[in-house]
Length: 81
Image (cartoon, rainbow, N blue to C red):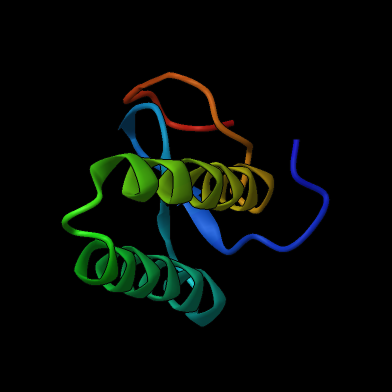
């Protein structure tokens, strides 16, 4: 499914992926840093915090899905072909 870089590997069970290259780790750590910064800055304004987190999380999920080897799908633990 992914013709681009493989920054993430699919989880063996369930849905999603984990970072496997420095680019994947950099994107993940940057995402976490942005979330922490927003939580500190907007901690007393939950509506604004949620409004800021939703698009950032969506962009992060799209990046993860497009750079995951084999794409995102539900996995039951079987070995990949």
